[in-house]
Amino acid sequence: MDVILLERIGRLGQMGDTVKVKDGYARNFLLPQGKALRANEANKKRFEAERSTLVARNEERKSEAQKIADQLSGKTFIVVRSAGETGQLYGSVAARDISALLNEEGFSVGRNQVDLNLPIKTIGLHKVTLVLHGEVDAEIELNVARSAEEAERQAAGETLTSADAIYGVDDSLPADGFFDPDAEFDDEDDNRRAPEEAEGDEDEAKD
Image (tube, rainbow, N blue to C red; front, side, top):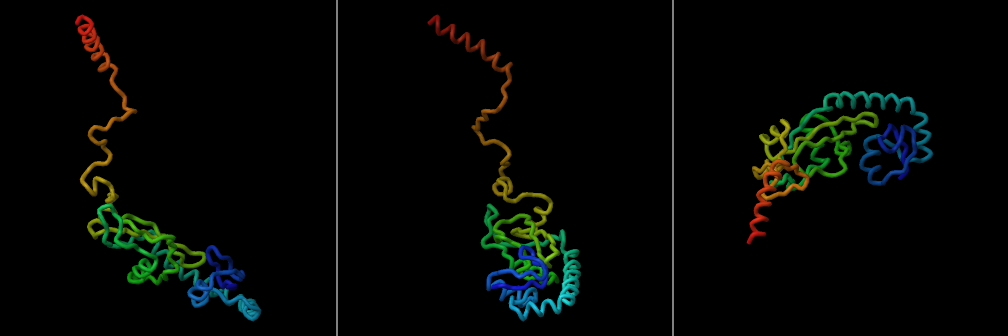
């Protein structure tokens, strides 16, 4: 569907641009949100006639979005989810979940404003960008954990998906019997062993 943008939209274009978008995106988001008009001659004339009003309205929306961005930017939200020992979630945290969380916290953010390419599927700290307006973004952090206590530990810098956190094993130490080919050996130890080996060779020769 061809639409006329009524404000700057991220990857689409600037106000007044005529762009082609998927029908569902236009019907479910751009048109009902007042961000675009169907591209036809009547709407093109309407846009030109109302351009100054649209510019003023866009600036007002931008200002409101900036106020929300100032409150949200850098803020951390805790999300408690069930997960296995490796940190893999039994499910995921999707854009709609983030939108619902923010609305519960008093911020009006639609799921279409959550810039999330793929759902979050592991515990940990995750950065998420919110597109609050075509010219205003905000970055928040989601602390996804199995409990509030684990969220505190993650916030303190602890990684709960390491072998040490899961099994009580320090994964920075080599396993028993591990041979490191790059390890350096003491030349004195080699020299001490050399005479003993030589004596052994002499005894074998006498026998």
